[in-house]
Length: 452
Image (cartoon, rainbow, N blue to C red):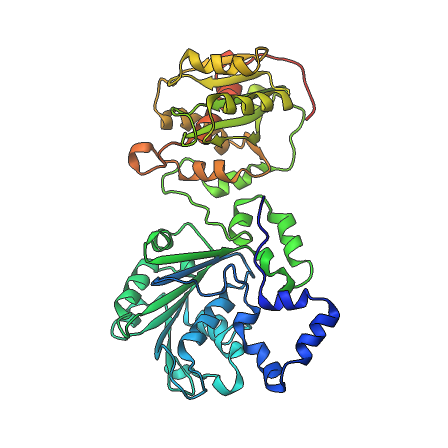
């Protein structure tokens, strides 16, 4: 059972009965009421906007568009520089504000609706000195505005904290990030926050994987109450299930690799909402080598072919990904058999390089009536995948909806011995399904037409 998302203190107060809420607010002093808008911990979403506990150096806030990551970054900087009173020193005195360009730093991080000027109380609001590229607080703390497009500007300054905004978009990301790290050398515990919509950026991935980093994450939906009415629903309707939607709305890091056979754009171009009448449907299975709770993933993919027109015009539709991990042979065979029945498939295709005849025995143990075909890999994974990737390039493959885990494997697959993913089980199952439907003459029977 999925646990409900934690609520902010303000949301909990709002959820009280009207009489209870009124009694609570009436009990506050005039100063307390006046200060409430500036108490960030009262309003922040605890899932991704409150500073995490622990001895971290970098806090990465991944978020969809409008998820509130800019506000979280600005509030964190405010918490570092402010003292208990307006003129008292805070934990940090020298701050780096680094964005894609100087204009972006000013427009978003400083002067934006969620920027440092807007979120600061009047008696603690900093002054922007744009000619000096400086932001100066009443207590003497200073922030330097820096463009990531000019990493050399970070040669010389030194800081005790930093905010890097939209790092995944930086054109000189490696150089700017490395130079910023050399600058974080003041104070006992220099720290930095990164706020960004995720992209397949190697620097971002390295930062997230660093043992000194902590990552929080949220999609646009968590902040929809503060967005224009209909904004989220409109974009979700247009981009839901697409790679762009997963990245820009769900705040998900969608990874690809240089030299991969598939790209996110290629897969998005193949996406449709429904399949037409199909002439043949198969369930393809890539069985795991191991079994039990720690077993590898078992790839289970359902696909069908529409044979309208000449063979060169046939199209194949990826219908479902039922891949499972940590299942016993009987369990994954049961999932495959259920998919076979639910989709009225014509054949179950299974790779038998590792399991041999035992694979068919397991399948027959759960359903003796399944039309079964064993396939054996005689070539490497990339050589088997290349003809299938060519079908995508020709526009002859469609994805009915989105399959995030499968599509991530596709976009990351280069080759096992050249930095690709170790065991692309879902991808292997996809390759076997499309090979049977479109590339292998042994699978070209002509059973009845059915409507899904």
